[in-house]
Length: 436
Image: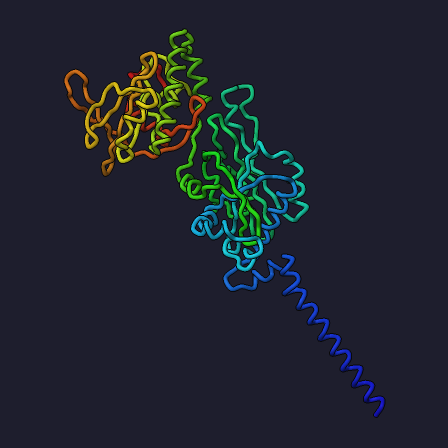
């Protein structure tokens, strides 16, 4: 009996010890580790509808960039939109309370998109090596720097445009923004070269990189989202509104060099003075219209000069802009007059063939043509000053893209060649003599 009693006691002690050990493990996992943050991803994963894979990838990416002082900021449209809808709540959320529920980084997705300004990146190679050491598989996409295309000897110099870093089944898309002359940010086209594995990630699902893009330089702020400290644009709604209209097209520098080899540039004092005044007038007009919130684009001879020779045509005597009539504002005339540009002519009416002309310095004139949209075309009107006779000029429908011209970010028609040919005929874009 004594031997049986000893065995029973031994078994009871073993069971009790095991139960106590299991209780300790449970307590550590669900209470202490949650308090320290290390058990956060598991607790999030257990929630129905949440996917911890994305959250863990984002957390590791933020740890990576923070350790290297790389100031990345979130530009993912879906997450920014969620943040914007709950902006006041997010701003007032403490770090501790934000870990109770995963609302933003736990939706099952293939990508999360961040960006950085390249000039602030001090140790690109070290960052790349550390990313791979942390388990990321990274792909780097480079292409030639378009800012150097005007300098023949430097054209072809490559710069990084995109990084895609994959951790298990989730990837971080890092869009590299570069500074441009007009104090804005530009990112390049994500073009896959021959050696790149097309199956590395589902590239077609990427939301940035289908074409180059241009954005205002965003002011950033730090917030805490799902327990993670991230930088976002201070005005997320403005950034979101820019995305669908961000497409950027370069001036055709190679063709411009060829044009000037065939037709010598006019370097007379008169031509250079006009180009200087026209540049100042364009920049003043851009500043004035931006304050009003009015979209506009380079039109007529100014658009032709950008497209054909990447500069202002020296023998034209005015600057031409286009505005959609639906963007017209009643205080546009007073705004230009306040900017030092008195009204010279006003032709037509808002509902029919409106055209405004403002007087700049040294007889350089600013002409603004208003465009009207029909079912299958657009048009702008013209009025003969002496007779009052009206004309209607037809254009195929077009969309607007950004470009850089005279060190400033401007819009131009994306379908540029069709737009110019509607204005001047099919032979004009490659010829010197056009009625512009």
